[in-house]
Length: 191
Image (cartoon, rainbow, N blue to C red; front, top):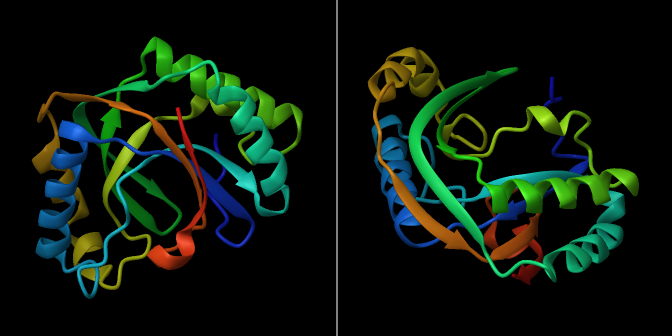
């Protein structure tokens, strides 16, 4: 089982979707945030797919590894279709599942293996990693009560719903775990 993230010890390596995938995810995120009054001042988590988590103190090593890995890739195909619900500790998540495909799996595994060999990744069991886009969660939420109370109903509402979309993503970034746009981005790379 993959351990919960530790915001005080980790940074996140993310892939930024665009096109139809981004439009769908933003639309649903805003609707859900409004319905459950999750965030104040219309500040939402940026839409992303987390590829890995790294130790904060190993940022420079992660940058070198990412640079050496991206040279073989020109873009990552992203396919989404259905939804899922997760609960970890005190946090609930409604997510848009990202389907595994050859390019995404090859890139992410190669990156993770290099990060792991260098003792940079904080993920012990990457074979259990599930690619997804979080649409609504209690992480960073100002109002968790309504979301938590209606979480099972929300999951039921999205169960079996299919919204196939695809895009190609070509931006990888390293982020601090924050909603503060001026403080989040540490490094950005283009495939």
